Each structure stands twice: as structure tokens, then as C-alpha cells.
Image (tube, rainbow, N blue to C red; front, side, top):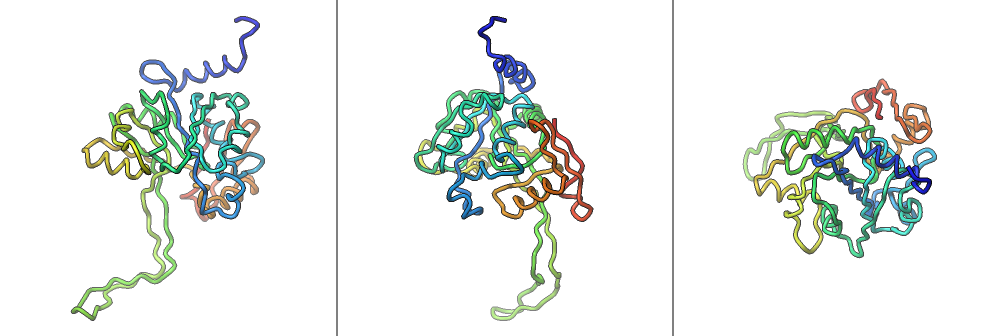
Length: 287
């Protein structure tokens, strides 16, 4: 190795071996970081949502470090709202052991429409939101996606929704009258939801129109209309959507109570499950 070789370049090459395409090329990652974070106003009026703090780090820094540890070193950030702040914080990614490039939305394009701006998506690639707190293994998603032969694969999680009302089951008697036949007090409903983490094949880009606003759910619906294979990769570990105030508050509480440890360079995250919500916070660790 010559004296002019940057040690970071060696680390990047070493990490990339752990997240490569079938042809040995690194798997590209697209992080969506352009949203306005309307659910977290007024904070996001002056700070982009991916820069919201958790402990002594920005959420997006945690995500990028996790990707780097798992070998995903080729990352494109799709930015829009307050993009200059994100670019100022992360630069070219060298301080975080990744190579960062940026695409900037001059006007909102939607969570899938921004993919039109990104070059080099000619092999399996990873796509995720930039406001997640999780110990998800991205490598396992890519492995499962390839083995399944899907056009796209969505990482999923079970989430409970508490209904704060008594829910009636009614049957119509006539045009103006109904009869109550059942009553459930404040039920808990469980749904399989998208985690905002996806593995895609390049052919999925053909389902995105050339112009206009286009969200990821639109892409999924187009894929289903085309009878393409859309897979689900189930996960039961820690996952919080920081775009939701309640999830952000939970993440802060986990850190403050020592149940989510951001150690050193975020090499590991460990959560001890609260007894009252053990289904939401199982024991887990991420490398």
C-alpha cells in the first residue's frame, strides 16, 4: 500500500465485501431525507427531521453508522427540505466511513419519484427512510430479497393500534335504523405495517412515471397491477418511526433509561424490554 493511500479507503473496501451484489459490486443504498417532517413541527421548521437528536447524535448519523457497520458504504441521500444543513453535517461521508452523494429535489417528487434523479441503480439496491431507530439487519433483507426473486421486498413489523372508544358492531334494520349486535370497549388492533425499508431490483424503476409526484405506495400498487412479485420480510425487533412524536418520545426514553445504548461509534445497540410492552421491545442486538 502506498503512503498516499487513505486508510478510510481501505476500511470502505473491507466493509463493502460484506454487502455486495451477485457480481461482487457493493449494494447501493438510497436514504430518503427530504421530507418536511410535518408531524414534528415546530422543531422541523428549523431542523430537518433526519437531524433530530437522539442522545448526542442525529438520527441520520445513527442510520448511516449502522449501514457502514453492515458493509453498505455506497450511499445516496435524497434531500429537499433544509438540504444545506444535511449536506453541511455529513459532507462526503468520510467521517462516517461511507461515500455519500446527494440528489436534491427542487420540488417535492414523492418517496419513489426521487429515484428518477439517481444514477447507477442498475443492480439490487436498498432504500430506506432516514428517520428510523432500529437494530434491523439490512444484510438479511437483501439476502432474503435475492433468494425470493422479488421485484421489491418490504421490511414489515407488527404494530398495535389502540382505539380510545367503545366500538359498536351494528346491523341495518331498514334505511334509517340499525341495531347494535356487538360492543367492544377500547379494542387493540394489530396490523402488519411497512418499516420504510426496502430492497428493489432495477426493473422496479420502469414502474415510475417520468414526471410528477410519485410515492412508494404508488410504486407498490403499480407492481401489483403488473403482477410483479412483491415480498414481505417480517421483523420483530426494535423499530421506531421518529416521524411520529410518540415513537420519538419512546426512543428518547429508551436512551435516557439506559434501555437503548448508543455505545462509542454506535457499534451496537441493546434494548432491554419493558415488562409492559415486551412485544414492542424484545431483546435484540445489531452488529
